[in-house]
Length: 423
Image (cartoon, rainbow, N blue to C red; front, side, top):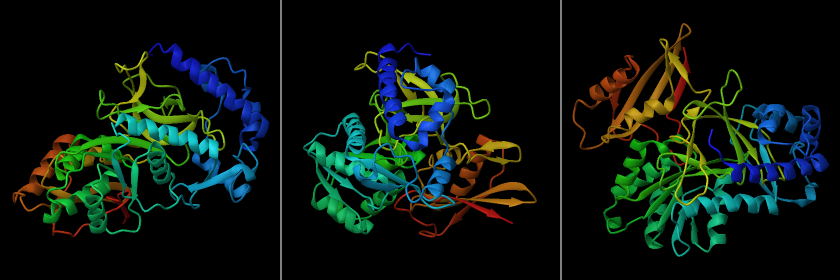
């Protein structure tokens, strides 16, 4: 464990202030804190992690159902809240999230860190290829950029071709979108001769693990004539959590003056050591209006620490970014397979334009099949080469089929390339 007294002292002070606020006004956490023996005088972060139980997504679902429509995780009177967002849908529908002006501003501060780390200057034009629905990440990114003074162009409600034309017309320097849509829009850009003189400088991606996969990043950069790609991640439930440091590419640094994070073993619930993988657990420190204490995110990460030259202490780092979801692993003939591992291999073939994985279950046994769509320069044996690479990586025979051009779906937000079917 890295010795980080300044960081931990700051986090503890913020945590103590937060707990005091919750004890006074938050019905969701007041009883939980009391039962756990946790109060505003908590002595250490370790003491907090030992005593405080986890918060899960189902806890939030049940609370919303018991106290509709927003649940009881509100620290202040409802009249103080001015922002509404919601997470992706669950089996019981999307989860609402309310914020006061102060909590919203705290999340904009976190996005400022993301832009700063990516080297985005205030004189640059930023294009947001988002639909601007109720998902929090769209709004916080856009409003942070406008608050910084960047000319910010919203791309909601436009086709991919219209978005590209708007980027060219406004000479956008920076693009914000998901890795999937950076690939899709990049294909439109590469096929448009009228946009040949346009040069995008940076692409900030989030929403999917692909932003920290070297193969995905390289393909995005190639499609956009060498534009720099920066990863970031966050969640509607907690806000913008990480950024990519230039000295630590392909990994994500935690914004530690806004979040206290842990990485736990899913079985023992104990903190893992650096270099080990586990589930990411997050406590918000500055989003006091709708906080989460020890929230189990379901994200699979590898714990590490990184000592940047511009910092006095090491920073908590997620090596390789978000590696996937802990509940997405599938066992194929005794082999543990994560979707991100499959994508990493397939994206290692630049001739592959798009792909889809079909997971079927026959007689309680899971099987995988892969469909790939090839670019114009692909060699005839592409499917065979991809299949060999998958077999070498997993010691499994995974059939790979080449399909017609544009046969596979394209996505503007989060991709759905992994399809599960039951026989």
